[in-house]
Length: 365
Image (cartoon, rainbow, N blue to C red):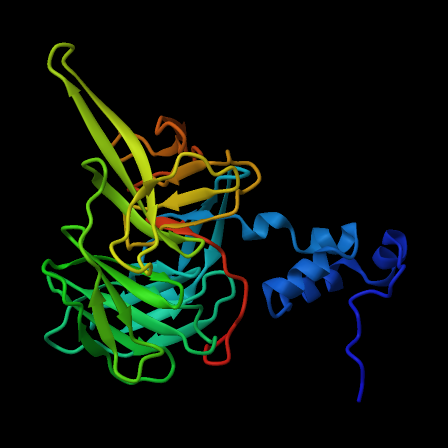
């Protein structure tokens, strides 16, 4: 049996490594790496190989509005870490509108409600079943990238306590599930192998649509926030449900209104009634939030951005020019940063965390 060849022999110097392969071939190999784990190993070999897969490739980007009638499907993205605006030609967006973003993939819908998943950084696509005539789907959330084993899509249904779900690349129709919430579904989050549906009143239901023999929904005992919140976003970070919201303070005497952003987390899978606890300090956390499509996400701090912070793709209360809002988790105070001068038009669509892998066994490259 042949042994798996190492990326570079042990003891190879950076000079030896860089002199063996021309730069264009090294870059091409970097583009074909099958997963992030292989990319990390590739980058660790030497400085030349590290340059072939630059860290900026993984930095979150803001997707900007696009013209669905564009002949070449040109879409602009803005990378905040270095201020670069770049364009990708994505023919798959022609004639379609964006209706979601999950795991670095876009959810596109055309005029007859046919839905397509697109990875804007690899060009891979996957089809979703058409919704029924009486169903109007909202934002779509994925359990994992298309092409991975067991990828499931769950979609909110507008003004309904029901959700629709399907196995991507397997099912030819959506199935429906009652969330058992009292109010229509506001958000859906995938957390620890299950989906969490949140009602417009803050009630939570845990959905098991992948591992259970019979899909089911279990409401969580109702629990309130410590402070009255204007909800901005729900997301999962490190296996816990997080909520970002604003606390509003008014002073009639001084005739002022003060807004402070708060972050809370809870373990919705714990026995008994969960409890929201405020997050005030996490030195290795950056959260990226969007107004649209339930596409917020969080993770390890990103070089070039302040740690322990929230990055909102647009200011909540509106401004005449595009501004990125950076909020400190510790005190909820925000600062506004102007976008690159090249960015014009309507508000940014959403944040996207580039997913360079995989192209997927069930996806079309």
